[in-house]
Amino acid sequence: MHKLWRHARLATLADGGWGLIDDGALVTEGELIRWVGPLPALPAQTQIDEEVNLGGALVTPGLVDCHTHLVYGGNRAREAEMRLGGASYEEIARAGGGIRSTVAATRAASDDALLHGTRRRAQALMAGGVTTLEIKSGYGLSLQDEAKCLRVARRLGSELPLQVRTTYLGAHALPPEFEGRPDDYIDAVCAWMATLHAEGLVDAVDAFCESIAFSTAQVARVFEAARALGLPVKLHAEQLSDQGGAALAASFGALSADHLEYLSADGIAAMKAAGSVAVLLPCAYYMLRETHLPPVARLRDAGVPIAVASDHNPGTAPGLSLQLAAHMACTFFRLTPLEAVAGITHHAARALGLGDRGLLRAGLRADLAVWEFDHPNELTYWFGHNPCRAVVQGGELRASSNA
Ligand code: NIG
Ligand code: FE
Image 1 (cartoon, rainbow, N blue to C red):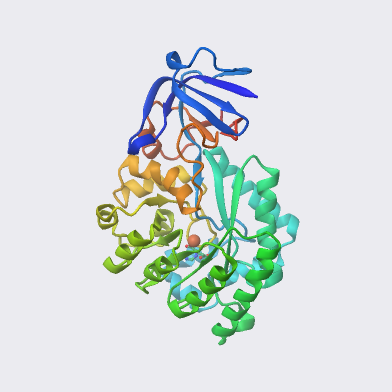
Image 2: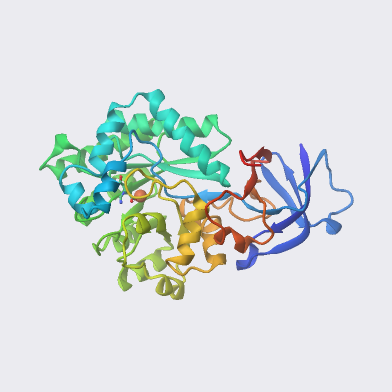
């Protein structure tokens, strides 16, 4: 089925700019874009089976949220209240709260309850223009519970008009049954990885490298296991302190290193050499009331590709708008609007190892977002309402809930 999508203002993001095309048109065949350009330039003999009039709306590539922790039970509103009263994230974590409290709620949740909560959150992100979503495990921390979370994530990808990539984050925190035995836990994480991978549940492997989580030596063991299975890696690195995590991840050819508030010059150089994407997570920065900025100017100067993600999680980033994350990346981190939009489209796709989306170009996936405004710089301008009218997932139009 060949579809002509006409009467659109396209922001193709091609060639490093906005790539604006007025009176633009796309031809899609099944899930792929076959042709993009100004309507008058459409070759006369092009096969068209169906036409969709987009009413002059602005169309961008569908958004890619490349870092989320969407599957969990419960919430951490009480902890947020404690932090507002002066307790720090580290203090709460060391006292057994933080990630561990979500682990307890996630283990206690039924498959149906987890699926229901996660589906609702995924739908909120989709309504805001997201067509590809990465979902990490990391709140199960046992083989059975990590598998439960990854299965929920995979099921969303088959139920919803959404592309889901799953990341195994067993090395997120030390579960209580391994208290005082972090190296034994890392052995378990590596052993479970093979089982989960054999079940087809893992696209990539992540870890949390931090003084309150795992050391570089422990993360290296997780990454060795991933390499042995042929799985790509990414890392929560340099969020609260400089542990040298980004350089370690780069030495394993990581797809990305994420957070990066405390990233060093050596880390930047290593990421550049490895081609790793720097994923910035301004919602967590905001929620933790961090003041230490990631080194955006130095990343830019070094030519490290920068992506932006929601980091949706119950502890440090309960927001469900990737557009708001892009807005914050501009206001807090001083990304330009063009950098932020590249960061939630093609650079985010690259952080997932996906070269087939994130731009409007012939041969790529027909994943689009349709907006109520005129210029793509408005994506990082508005906040507090959802200006997405519709998404197109693999060539199929889906009206947004607010359209
Ligand atoms: O990306 N930094 C570690 N993981 C999450 C937070 C997890 C939590 O607090 O539940 C993050 O910010
Ligand atoms: Fe995270």
